[in-house]
Amino acid sequence: MGPALGVLSQMKGFTAENKTMLKLGHRLRLALTGLVILGTVITIALPTPAAETVVLRYGIFRGSLPVSDLNEFVETGETSRRLRRYLRLADLEEEQFRQILTEEVSTSPRTLKLLLGSPAGDVLLQEVSEYLYVPNRRDDQDKLRTALTTSAEDSQISLIEVLQNYPSDRVYINVNRVVSTYQQFASIQERFGGILNGRLSEIIEGLGL
Image 1 (cartoon, rainbow, N blue to C red):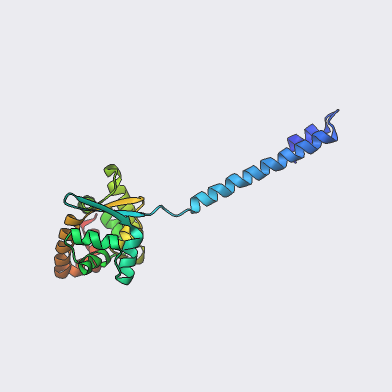
Image 2: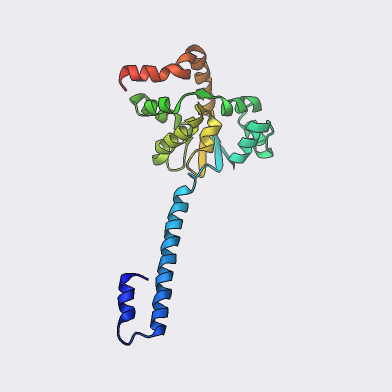
């Protein structure tokens, strides 16, 4: 019992019943305080929400499917009936789409942080958000930055990782743009693979970015 409650309990006319009620009130207050603290800890410990649904856009066509369908496709090569139908409508080969999802770029978290903090990073975010975005376009680049940073924790980034770490329940993919961008990226990586796989941080530091 706190000091103030102790003083009250010594007052003339303060009955045993009053003391019991005070003790119960004090215990209840402590219990509620504990619940608030516990609730705060639990809230802080909750993981960042990740994308659950992907919406594929191809021309005027639009179709949605669970991210879990893409996860299974990447891991086993098996396509759900819905994914098969969408790929057929988009005239996209299964193996090509799987390669787009799993193609990895080697980069350390530090290198990515340097890149995203530079003017070149702003251009990168703008470019990627043209084919990977959320319904509220104002949040695109912030959410994309979070997804990329989280994905780079294992020093590798792939499209499927970015989707898994995207802090939004629904993500849109512009299939036309992602295929075109992948083809451009594959060409650049073949010619300048050293830059993408380690020298980028040295270049950024050399430029003072």
